[in-house]
Image (cartoon, rainbow, N blue to C red; front, side, top):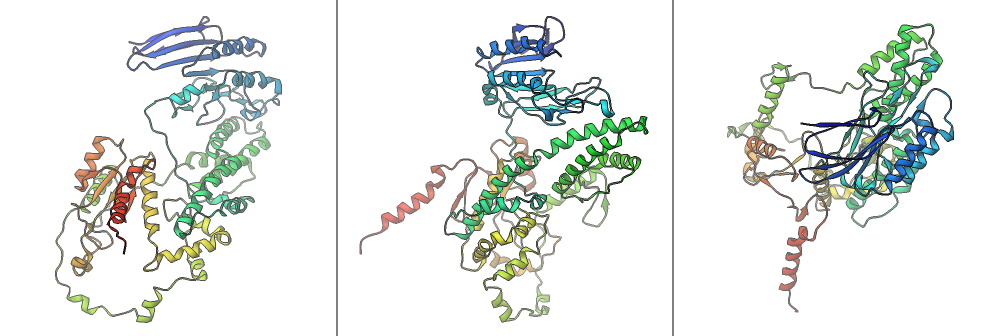
Length: 556
């Protein structure tokens, strides 16, 4: 059975589960501070809930209380609530301009108490004055702050601004599970970056370093270096476009509601300014999701409003699988039928089927490739051929796990051309195979990225191509138990998963594939493949082989 506490004037309430021990540390008209101790694991946390005065002079007592508390708290400390003040002019929309004195006291308190803003998802504004048109004001009055100990203990802490319901303030939802893994987003090149005037300068500045003589290794690391630079440049240049979209949507929604009630009284010029900003971010977002971009802008206010209602309601509708066709050709459109067919399809990939033995029809296949043409397949491609291939790429598609789309290679051709052409030597018979190793390592490295469903790597072993080549020629696409024309040897194939993958998922994968699970690392082309930190034990086998070979040498 849980318990509850409130501050002296009853404006702050805290409800706590039974497994939490609570000690009241400070109780004033503007804050209630408690020390929480979990009875199970002994974890301690100080929570300070704030309901600040609307008057600047009245908040002085609040700042002094926080100053005093900060000098004594060494455990994780979370401070959150309604501070009734902002820290910057970007946290306000509408109303009179922000005065420096309005924000200075609060910023100074945050600095002295060594607290940090914990960020948020959702709309920036947590308060609305309930009015529209010129009288409309939005502010970020509610926030969560934390000390360094809090962030060390809960590195994955997240704050979400929820939708306002029955109040002029947005509820704040704090998720601070210590056992959750951080979401590591893989790099994704955004094609709209190339339109920015400073884009090519970023590429030039970060494509100059050489990482060794191997062209594959050099190119691979230059891409990673550029990817890191672009990520930082994008944050500095564009900011969080999705957070800005959520904020502007809330402002537009209020104005549009007023327009529906009073079409003649709305300040259309003001609405159109906000809508223009929102259109700009929508265009960026739609390019990000690789959806069609470009929108019609109507000068007529009524048509403009209808356009926005339709767009806001449908803009985040992602591509969904509405129906699929099963093996006999029947269309399935219910969720249950689609799920069953998906399970059947992937299960059949690992089931043995009858293999035809009559290959007489192969004698009817004419020889279409001349010896000269065959020889050309082994020749090194020149720069013109590589350039034609690059500019024939799909600009919206990324060909590998590095996240760089065809548009990147096309826009940066003059900068990366020499490295890209040099790298083609690795595809010629008898040349470097390090690209295969780098690709495998990159894929396994990304297994740590949290997603739904969880990532899994399957290392497949094929039956010898020589033994089965004639039989496999006759296998049709309907025979799913093959990869590039080879039968899977399930006894020698292995499934690799992240070490935190649940037991149920592990059992499910095995029941479907009948392929055993093993742990990292494994050896691929003589090189250890692993995720996480590089360790000496990963290279133990290679080192032992080298030592054994060295010990077998004798002086001539």
